[in-house]
Image (cartoon, rainbow, N blue to C red):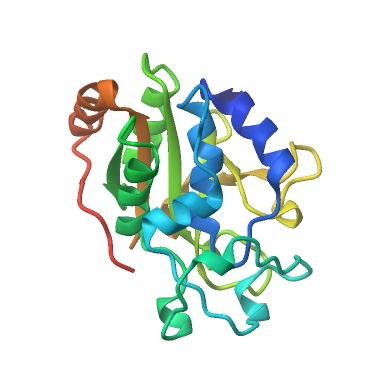
Length: 232
């Protein structure tokens, strides 16, 4: 049975209202959705998070950066710097982690979890389902591992549940086209093995209220997880 994390309902509801993401801003977009599970009010919007995270935009149309059939949106681009190349466009994990803390006036803390691997990922998600603190979980993935069509980019999604029996991870993606018709808009489940593989050179960003930082860090350390930030 799929166990929803404590903040799943607000994540799902918010996602339905804001889909799809602006082009090249999957990190700030997913963070803005994820933060609604941790902050009662005044969660920063995509543009505020993009500015705080140092996001940069490649202004030329690159259709392959989006899933087939998805719309191109440029909302919020006016206030962002231009990238020197397509390779430097978007938002780094380190920038996003810092930007989340900055844009929320440090009301939240971000704990990076680098490439947990399938077994530790299962343990982490099972433990988080019973966590006594509020949290949200961003995953930085490589899309080629998670889609059946030709889409090959770095990407951020929000994790909102875990099905131990079916060994599946529930994610909120950034385009309606990526959702399962039998699930809320933009949402689907992926196998734990595939999800872990998609994060093999990347990882997770756990967002918690600042007062819960020590408890969340203790949980991750009990699973012997790495806490350095990746650079791809």
